[in-house]
Length: 346
Image (tube, rainbow, N blue to C red; front, side, top):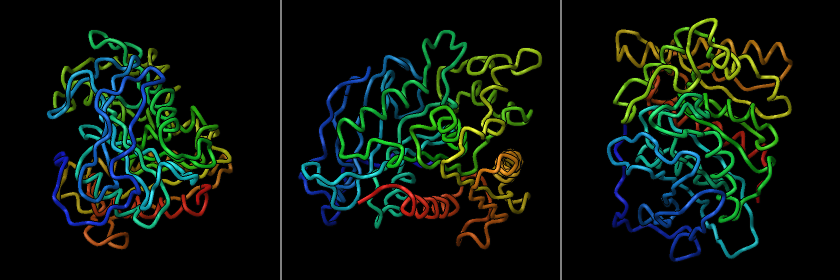
């Protein structure tokens, strides 16, 4: 996992935003702003801020995170001016398990992909959430992550930045667990998003291997502390008690995506003897993407499917593994290109 970037780097770079400081945020929608936006470096394109949420008041935390607090990272378009009339589309980018929103890798990928794109990108904290309202959170207390992201973060961003606050100006994408979350959210709120993208997402909760992945993230301290139980998010993962797993599985509910732009990106793991963990994880995630693609085809829903195998023809340095920056950079570059041909923008 990439390390969290320093919040102040002495870089001799041009200021991309018209303001000397980042926008300041007001409380609202059940969120309390605990840290006002601050630039992460001298480029003055990306800032972080932090909130407390009444929907997820006590998230589990990773090293570098403060209890009860959610960091959000936002990258602005070059030339963004909060006092001007110009409005921009927004991409919500959801991170994977055991990742953070504000990593150097997420920063680098986003700023590179959007350097020439009039697009705001928002990375919210996702914890080990599987981007869902948990059915049995236990001692952690309320864990309504879907409510937090869709009912609180999105309206807070629209209220404080120069966004296009409609599905014609809003997209969502994510990596791994975040790919699941992106498609999951798009299916639940098709009126909110004009485009959805999954980068190596695990999309089929009816797949026993995918259920094992979810269970592992619930139990593993490397995904955050405190840990929880295997039935915390979707209930018991075994028949006949697995109705919520089936009901929340993105692969089987693609009909809700009709009329939306859809893009799936996946490798095959490449050489399984090299970095075998990430090779196998990507290979198994690919199976869930094949099921999703088959269901999209059966529904007659157009979609983009970048099934790039060992990555050799996708991007230099990409070998088809699950968590490689060159693969993810190429995914994001391609997806932003799709957005700029589809979403409303300046």
